[in-house]
Image (cartoon, one colour):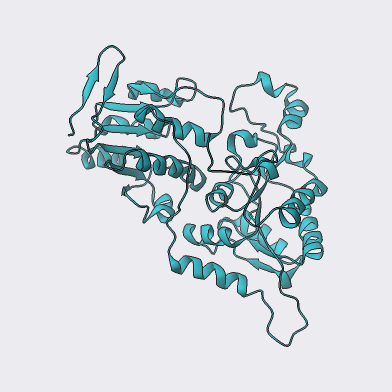
Length: 388
């Protein structure tokens, strides 16, 4: 245990500047969430380079994060039974931390926090500390109605009392990057053929984890037909290995087969990140690939109606998103978005139908015809340093 001091007047735990503090970060969840948390962990490493950081996460997340500089990992599945909880408590019975950053708030994870011994446990504010998380923490981040990345950065700011800036350097290796390049090269015609090499590359990740977030299949098909004709582009289809995702991508692959590479269900997390890094733009609904592409500095044409891109869109690069959230709230909930709680979703299967093909093509044109490669503006302004 590192030396620390308790300030009884402010209920703060203070660590000497030169103390090698041991910090536990807790975040399991989906790939998009852990990518957003990764920005905060990078900021923490920058602020306190002498700290020992242990990230407790799931195997899928580790498949993307493995090799992250300056971070140790404890890889374990989310608990599903009493035996799982007992195993977790035994694993950490003899370990001590100085700080726990409780970056996930649901009952299954909240019940893990008592097993992590530390004088300081930082959790979400009362508004976002779901299912009683505030009971297991002795300090809380302030509430801000802002992007999820900012909420994770608030953990770092609450601990260090310094501003935190989001940066990403996903730990990809040369093999992953070379694999991605080979996938693109596979669509380049052999010499002597009359086929034309793709001028640009559009990655499409058509399925989200919840069906209500998905755009209409026939509109994806129309868009692929028109985009390939207009820009001579190649199309990279990505996704998971569920039946619905595989079926949709197989259907879309037949729209322009000579220009489409269907990699749905065929990528590791690192390969997906490398592939999105090679693309000129990603087209996707509210799903984890949006945040992976953001981390790889690839522009995203995000399709949003169920949730606001201000909350879950590509961080500080929402300028290319098609945002129909306000219209969806008005049509399907009869409300003004300004009067609703910060995390309100429109749970209606027709919400995404508010997004038309023409407006998506318009945003793709902004990326492919006007903006330089991998430079997405926010409200017309360049993204410089991703300051908050």
